[in-house]
Amino acid sequence: MPLADVELQDLGDEGKSEVVEGEEPPLDARLLAFGGVSTIPQASFNFINSIVGAGIIGLPFAVKEAGFGLGLCLLVGCGLLTDFSVRILIQTSAKHKQYNYEEICQYTFGKFGFYLVSAFMWVFAFGAMIAYFVIIGDTITSVLTTCSIPAPPREAIIIGCAVFIILPLSSFRDMSSLSSTSAVSVACDVAIVLIVSFKCMIHGATKIEPVPHVASDAQHPKGQFGDPWDFAHAAFMEAFGAMCFAFVCHHSAFLVYTSLANPTPKRYNIVCHGSIGVALVLCLTLSCTGYAKFQMDTQANVLNNFAQDDLLMAFCRFLLAMTMFFTYPMEFFVCRHAWISTVHAGWEDTNVLHYSVTVVTWGISLIIGVLCTNLGFVLELTGGFAATFLGFILPAAIYLKLEGGTIFEWETFSNGSKMGAIFLFVFGVFTMITSTGLTILKGIEGH
Image 1 (cartoon, rainbow, N blue to C red):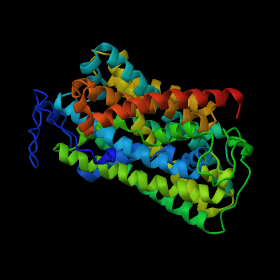
Image 2 (cartoon, rainbow, N blue to C red):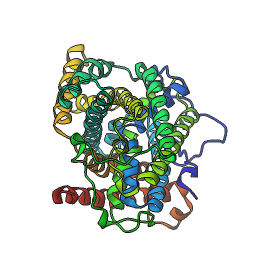
Image 3 (cartoon, rainbow, N blue to C red):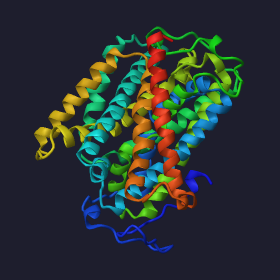
């Protein structure tokens, strides 16, 4: 049975009773106190935006590393695992009246769990923010060159966009304020996928050598693989790390959940299934068409495979930059939240604290984003290390600790949710160790 189709069991306050089909349990007063006002479409736009960010343009490259057949299988598997793990995480947390990732980890594993998840949330969100700055520098530079506009240095472009666009959007307190920009961002993502797919299916797509400012993107030598259409290629574990980067959204799932008006389990499941489903369709479409066209020439940013004098692709790069402008704040919310809840635990969330943490976090990510140019390495390392832990290992561990009861018993084999959680945990540990290790080794070897 596919993990996405497993019906999660609500074990109730005593851990044994089941919810009657068709009935919604009463909402906790603390959950309602969050005052969420987002509709299902608004919450879905925010959720899709947190999934389909920088990672999507690196997926054709991930398919190149994994092999076309295995790459698509891993991509679908990553989507199904993400859907299952998000639902068990949110449902388990809601039953125990814990409404953010840190709270449920502390409730389950004590202070150690609290600090562990906070650290991984910060690492994942921070890595994403760095990747967004790298993409902004690449895309805006290319757009200006195409339009015959004298382009300032890449560093100046990143800093200008960061100061005048990203910082103001990152200063909001409530994620609901970003629902409109998230809708624009999702629309841009859809347009990018359609344009790239269209260009790849006609003869107008031109393979080019990497432009200077992205020449250091991690690329495997062509000789390391066999035929481009082999089912599997050697670097499939590193590729899966990049896929995890694109899909894992658990660190923002709670923010979306608490921003939802009338956040019943049924309404949240609609948001979850719909958002991940749309993201998976977009990712598969871009991955198939992008790799089919460029095959072993596919770069870490597939847009860099197109000639710079292509006006339609210049528009596509502009849309990607727009997406980065509006997706960065989604990750920034998580990063700032993790910082304040650990470093400034117990402090009153005053305007001084809010804006000082905002500026410091934004500034550090900007400095690293300006200095970094290797997008492929950032996606694979962040995905393999932090995304697998947050998206697979931890949700499974929380579920098994709070709801799983005794694991080593015959009844376990008849419990779909428990078996799914066990598989999720084992698979996550294996993926985290192998993907992270191989990515670091590849970086050391200079591939």
